[in-house]
Structure formats: C-alpha cells, structure tokens
Image 1 (cartoon, helix red, strand yellow):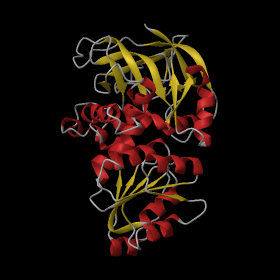
Image 2 (image 1 turned 45 degrees about the horizontal axis):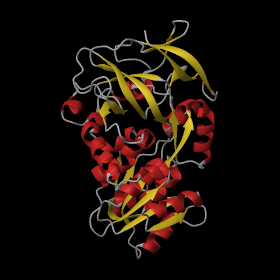
Image 3 (image 1 turned 180 degrees about the vertical axis):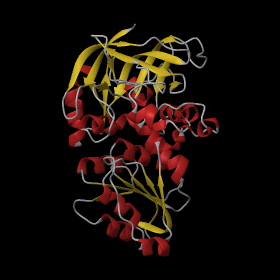
Image 4 (image 1 turned 90 degrees about the vertical axis):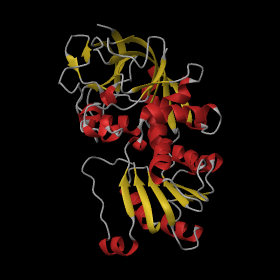
Length: 370
C-alpha cells in the first residue's frame, strides 16, 4: 500500500495533525496522484469547524494539482506523468451523469461530502496502525502528499503552467466562473452584483469581464478585497459594513436593481440582500454554503409581484472535462488572471494558511507540497 504524509483532521475544532497514512491500491477506474499543490477552500474549514457533517477523523482537501504516478487497469483518459487538476467526484452511471450533468449526480453527497469512503463502503485511507481513516473527500482527500481519485474527477492540464495558479480550478475558480458563464449568463446591458469577494466571488468577477454585462458590482465587508475586486474588473464596489447593499444597488442602477446577483459568502443576510436587490424578473444564483440546516425567509407577495428566480448552483454547473480546460486556456492567454487571488504556503504551514483565510487577509491560500 502506498504511504503518504497527510494533514489529518482528528475532531471538530482541533488543529490538523501531520501523520503517516496508507492509501488503498488503485482500482480499475482510479488514479494515484502525487500532490504538488492544493488549495484551502471554505468547505474544508467548514468541516474542520464541525459545520459540515463529514465524518472525522479524516483527511480533507479537494483542490489538488498533481502528477499521476499510478493508474488502474481501466483508466484511459490519463497516464503516469500527466499533470492533472482534481475536482469533484461523480458516479458516471446515474441518469444525470449519463446526460452530462455530473454536479447533479444521484450520489453526489456520498461521493463528495458525507461518505468518507467509496460508495461500496470500502475505505481509501488507513492510519499507520492499519485502522481505516475517513477519506474520499470530494473523491480525493488531497491534504496529503498522495491522493487517490477516480478517472472521472481528474482533468489533464498543461504541465508548463504554475501549479499554485491551477489549484483553485478544481473548485473555487470553477464554481465562481461557472456560476456566471454557465448559469447566470448576463446579457448585454445587464448588471451583475456579486456578494462576497472571496476566491469564488472574485472568480465570478473575472468571468463577468468576459461577458457583455455593463456593470459588475462587488459587495463585501473587507476594504482590501473590494480594492482587489475593482482592480480585477468590478465597475463599482459596495462596503456592506458602511452602506445598505440593496439601496446601493438601486442607486447604481437608476432604481432598477441588478438583473443578476450571485451570493458566494454563505451569509443569509447577504442572500436576502441579493434577492431584494434584483430587478423585476432577475435571477439570483446561490453558491455560498452556510451550516447545514440554515434557512432563509422569503417575502411571498414580493415573490409574486417581482418574479425573481433563485437558483442553487453547485460547482458552477460544470462538466469538468470540458469546462476546466477552457478555463485553463483563458488563464494561459491572460484573460482569467487568477494569480491575483493566490497566496502560497508550505504544506507544513497549513494552520497558518487556514488562519489567514478565516481572517480574510488571504483570498485563496494554496499549499505547496514538496
């Protein structure tokens, strides 16, 4: 069994601990990766905080870039030596998967968030004592020097691009850019307001620059992130700690409101504002994930009068094998400059990186693994 060093989340609220782990041998459709870089995402920290019910102890991490070092007997899409981005997992057999909608996979929660093992219940990770550890997080558990994924959730990418820039493409960049390009699709003259200027929100701002949206408005509480949003293409910014975002949107749009809004922060107050700030017939995309069980109230008469559309968006409604290579090419040609979001840390500084992310000082922390 391959051995690796992993940052293990032993219990909710406790620091990561570096431990030797063992990985199961790749099955026919599985791929073994040597992880070179991995982003830290809000979902990783939500699990570690106890807000998302992934079983612990376990290994998190779901934004890996790595080199393929082993493949199962049925893998055809990649070979040892390839550089790949690891993204979310899907079964490939249910109706949504067969129809090209893997984000709606019938087994998505078990494969990505809540299972901790393969669908058949078999573990992919073991502690040094031989006891199973929960893994298979987003089909990869990549806070480790090695990760076991499936051929469905790895996407080959060029080997000459910086791995730290590519790390977010498996989740954060894909989610923000996909929400805009695949779902909201602002039309000429539209206003898009993005609530939350983290990695997902700023990826949405970058993607919005590629559309015909007339106004791109970023809403956040952190002045530094708002400054960055403006540098990356936002035509206006709103500090939600200093002014009412709904009133600000009305002022910026001549009273009309925004035809498209996107809520990325997971704050229900921001979600209510994102819906209230819509123009008549507008669409609000929701990607921010608050703790499980969180609910938000809806003004039903306003729902009937104004006809808003509220749509949940998972992973940018992406087909990764098609969308990630397109995003990577946009990055290569300078049209999706995600480098501005990234701050790198050595793997052993995972706790510092997590702290910097929680404080808002760093937008997208990426761990480099030697």
